Length: 88
Image (cartoon, rainbow, N blue to C red; front, side, top):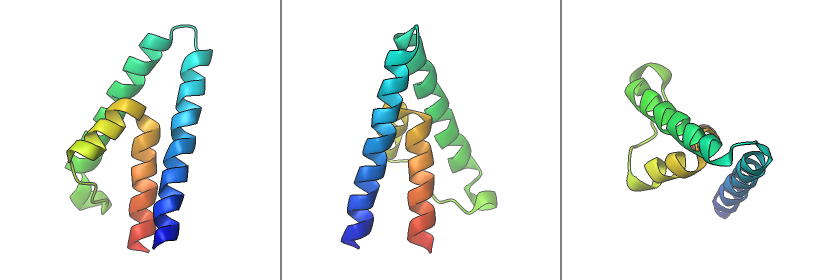
């Protein structure tokens, strides 16, 4: 079980590093950060509303909402991967 915990931390750290590199390389980093945060929160809400159809049960709590707002779409992707790993 500790393998999953450390693996999740490493995976989210890689997503965060990739996200920051892309933000720095873009010509307008503030716009990139705001747009990606908006997309991340929208994806999380869509996944929450369609949880009965998709089978993904990602709870809306302060941790998931802040992760999707700060890191955007990569955080939601990481939460989806963690959900699939836990269900297996």
